[in-house]
Length: 417
Image 1: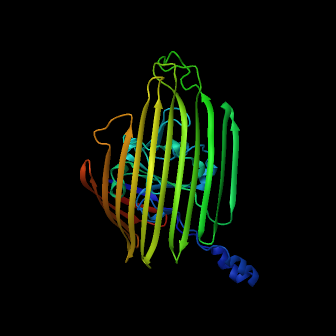
Image 2: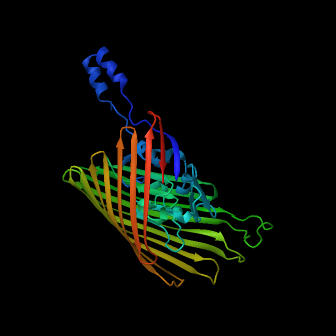
Image 3: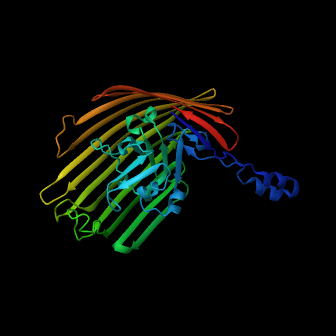
């Protein structure tokens, strides 16, 4: 059980200068003042409740990083960006492109669920999400949920959830091109084009990032078995596309794909061989969102992610680990008096392969979940229950209850179990 006192971001900002303008300025100036937006709403968050909720109303610890903040940060990778968040620790086995692990609030890295546009990514054998293979240049926003979320997402979310949303087009046609060069023969190029036409939105982007790197183990005395007088470089290439079309009033259908592959070199134990890892991450999904009634929205999402790793640790040693995850989710959001009901069904099919033989090389998980979030004056409540039926481990039901009380406009106390 956790109890937290948090400062709440203001949801609105009153446009008091516009009120004064109506008394002191002529009509032409008043019209210009009225064109200014009267309200500034808080950021919308999806990960904390699986429904779009204002950040200052969710009963969980959430960080939202928008595209503008990503560009201002100066971070060169997703892991570098996440390392600056409170409650999140990033561990890497080397420089850029090396294996990375995320630890949220002290939980194991395998207890952090990573989603890309709602699709699960990572290895089903190691439990590790492939953070280092997600190109930051193709990320629109990131939501980091700290704390247990198994009642929403299953057992992988014991520590928390990191959800990455890829870039989507909006507005007039906008091309972008970035090229850079730095020390150690580091070079980077990214190109993209995005925009919208009517209710059609589109984005396509690609890039390449590489460096000769440095010697990761330069001291032959401290680590004699790992010492090699060579550079441990890396390279990564990626492609991303997103297309969506609106129809009727608020209905939408779309599809997205992200492909990232790379190689990073490392010093293997006890051999002069120039060892390296080849990695490939693919995420593809399609979705249909329908507004069945004025207060009832249905979202059907189907997709697949693939995580492939080839380890060339010596001239005679080779290993391969592949994970394929096929995913289907059907979620219903229904507005009720005082709150919103969540009802969803999920099916996850996982298949592993490679150079190792497994007793079980595939499994399926069928999940149903119910939730309700409501607000009554200064009181907020969130209730969730999820049942997972795992073909390998059996069934399990997980529940969550959270309550919050708003002390004033800036402070709220909340507890969850």
